[in-house]
Length: 66
Image (tube, rainbow, N blue to C red; front, top):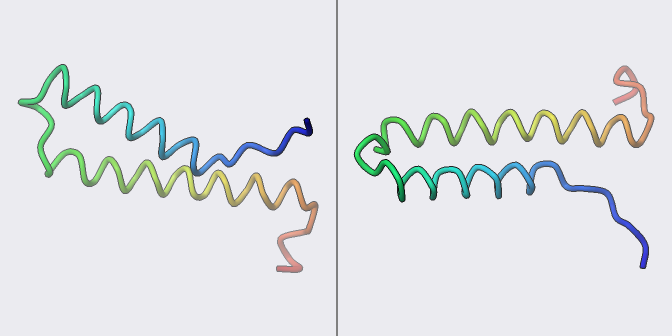
């Protein structure tokens, strides 16, 4: 069985979903939309940027050529 590369964006989204679910389970009073939505968007954006950088490094294409 051959290994495939890790999809960093999907991994990050799964970790964030798990952390938010645990937050709602253990401290539901502090988990409201005003807190959760910005954190979710910031986290997904960060993981998206990291995934794009990782994919570019795997392809070894210079940024100037994109």
